[in-house]
Length: 324
Image 1 (cartoon, rainbow, N blue to C red):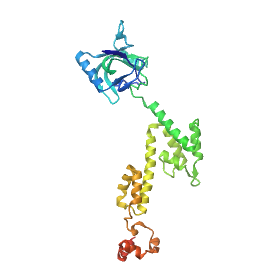
Image 2: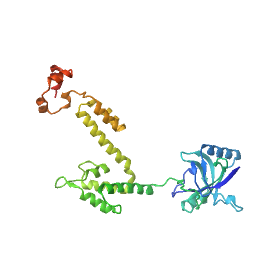
Image 3: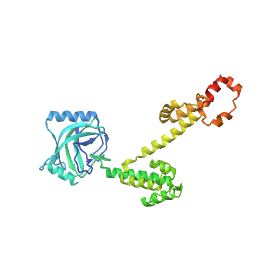
Image 4: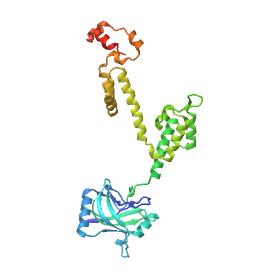
C-alpha cells in the first residue's frame, strides 16, 4: 500500500531556465506532510513506472491535476536522471510557465509522490507542480544561486577574518576597516609604507607592498569576492610554514639541495611527520656544503677524535670541507 505525498522545492531566482531541474532531494526528506526516504531504488522505481505508462509526467499549477478543475500544464518532464544530491528532470516548459518563472511569480517546485508504507520510501512520481507554498523543511535550491548572493557571503567571510586579525568589532564599516589597515602600516621610507605582515599574508601581497596596493586589493575583493577564497589564504600560510621547515633542514644538513622538492612535498602532505624526520635524521650533507661563509669555515676547528669516530679523515676534510 502506497501513500500519496506532496512536497515542495525552492526554485531560485534566475533569468535562464536550466535544461535539467532538481525535483526531489536524495536521502531522508523532512516535510510538513511527514518524513520519507529517497534513494537509488526510488529513482529506478519512478523511472520504471514512467516507462510503463509511456507518458510524460506533467508539471501543473498549484496541484490542479489532483483537483476536479481545469488543470493546464506548465511543462512536461521528458527524462529523469539520478544526480549527486537529487533526482533531476529534463523539463519542456510552456511559454506561459517560462514567463511566470522569469517574472518570479513562481519560486517552488512541488513533486507529488507515492510513498511505500513499509519503509517510507518514495517509489512513484505522480506529477509536479509550480507553487509558492513549500512543504519540505530545509529545501535546497533547484537552480544554483547566481554570483551576487554567494559573492556577498564570501566578502563577509573575508571581512570577518580581517576584523578578527585587527581586533575590530563586527559593526565596523568597510571605510573604517580600510582606514585601520592604513593606520597599521609601517613607514619603510619617505615615499613607501609597508603594511602589517599578517594582513599582507591574508591578502596574498608581498612584504614590501605599499598602502595603495593593500587598499586596491581590499576594494577588488569587494568588487570580485570570488577571486580570493579563505582556503587559498590557509594554503599560503601552510606553504610559508613548509618553506621554513625545509630551510631549517637544509641549514642543519639533514637534507640536501637535491632533496628540496621531495622535502616540500612531504612537509605539505604530513607536517608533523616531516618534523619527526628532521629530529631523527642524521646530518648527511658534508660540513663544507652547509656553510657558505668563507671566513666562518676557515675559523672552524674540528675535533680529530670526533672525526675519527665519524669515519672522516683529514683528506676528506681537505677534499670536501674546503670547497667554496
